[in-house]
Length: 308
Image (cartoon, rainbow, N blue to C red; front, side, top):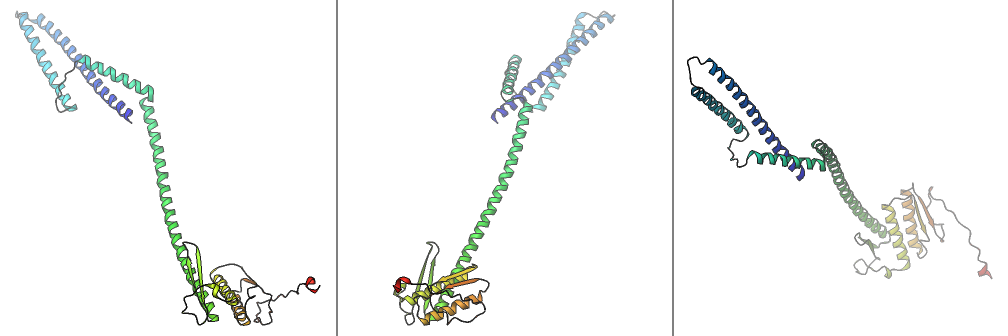
């Protein structure tokens, strides 16, 4: 850009000097023609001067005409100079110095053109670079808009995800507590999404005001029942085509097992489009009757080692 500005200024200055030089040459030609014309007129005056005018008067007339011509020429040059620069400039250089400057500027322009190409080539390369710049700027602007749009989409998805996670957590807590109330127990859950942890507390009947929340204080049947309630709560808030439980009632007494089986069958009836598989070594004679339930009873395994 700096080189281009220097070349442009040098070209402008050279054009101005050339224009002034052309004007001076034209004025010189006009003066020369005028002098030749005056010379011819002087010869005619000398020939036609029958009254005996002396050569001295002819010389005075010639000088007078020359003075008028150069005065008019000076006024014309001053008027044209004011068109270019209204304020008169003090010229402290001779014509030879100005010619040297013109020659030096021409050499500088020639050097710049040999290094960077001629004016047309520089203008063409500049136009191509400017067009490429505008194209890339447009692409960059579109990409920034697309990135901003993606940012808004991601923020919206994060908000929706957090809202759904909060809703699922609340529903899971409510379902778990409702299932625990089938055994007159009080249950609660604490979800810590930041640390990705879950704390479950169960209070047996009569201990609702007790602050002990250790699951290890429960009996085996109560822990098994709490586990079933937790799994049922998860099934209520999640989607999957298959639900399986294996030996969930091993440590339960008949009362807890009956309540658990009724809860499982009720859930399977509500979600009959899914397949539930319950595996238990206990008797299935007390299972609730339903057209959606199919019982597959396997034969007892042979225990030859025990018989021996």
